[in-house]
Length: 210
Image 1 (cartoon, rainbow, N blue to C red):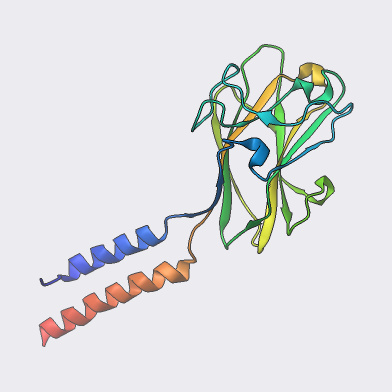
Image 2 (cartoon, rainbow, N blue to C red):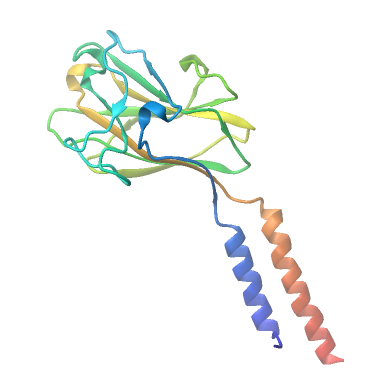
């Protein structure tokens, strides 16, 4: 079968688009929070309940079984005081151009405002003081909402979510689900693929002209 110049250029575009698709490095759907490897650190004052397995009677998960999400609520500080309840990932091997995506939500109840912070820590450290903010005071919405953040270009690291409400009297509930870290291949990788196919097209056109 003979390939035309136009066909080869089209193949180059397909190769570039295909190679540019993000590769999943890590994903967590919290089917079993207790055995997920995530670290629960409750710095609330006074400290109450840490993060829990989701509960379908509150709301269903974004994906998977109905209770497959991580849940924190106003009892993080025993219903009073200040909430600072952390959910910290295992150490994850990263790649250049890594991005973090996840879904978060609250339950729409008048008078409450549930907020959370998103953090990253390079390397293996899991103490809350080692994390730097990717986003702070994000107000959770009624319904699962997708969030995406770029990650620093380091070899390994951890991400963390902090349920953060200054006055627990204003807190209700927060859910986190479908956490994923992805990376797009280096541009040089798929760029060379496309250039190779374009070169083939040019060579064939030259031979046809001889």
